[in-house]
Image 1 (cartoon, rainbow, N blue to C red):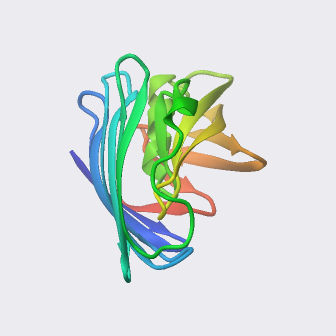
Image 2: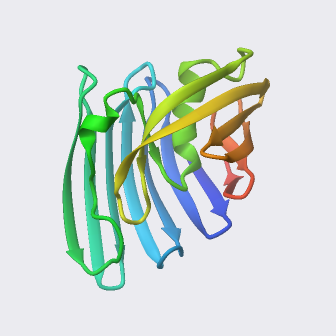
Length: 190
């Protein structure tokens, strides 16, 4: 079990992460965009780093949202949501039918969820580029969308992340945890 703290350009994140059999984590993040919010999450993957469960609670002044996102062993995604108060933007959840080719969730603005494809495919050791589809959970709305991404091996401690015209070279430690995500976060406590 590791306690990790990322300092973000617009907030911070703390996570307790266990990589002994897949990835298990609980975490909390605070952010400011589009409104100030606090987010709490729990994540569990299979031994092969395929998402099984992501539970997220987000709240701010006068509103709260909850998402329970699951991927069954048959590859079918499902979710349960709750929504209270007023927060402009999309409702939590989304079209789960469009996610059936996704193995991973991606909790927006969290460097932790980049770890799953990196570890599953040995991207810090193996040369090449791989494309993925993610179940992207937008923050703080908790709206879930189909989101194509790619990762390219750059070296023994880095990969290039690309998605929809965006690119960042991520630096990872020996466990595959992102230590530097330019423009988003830097690991402060390992």
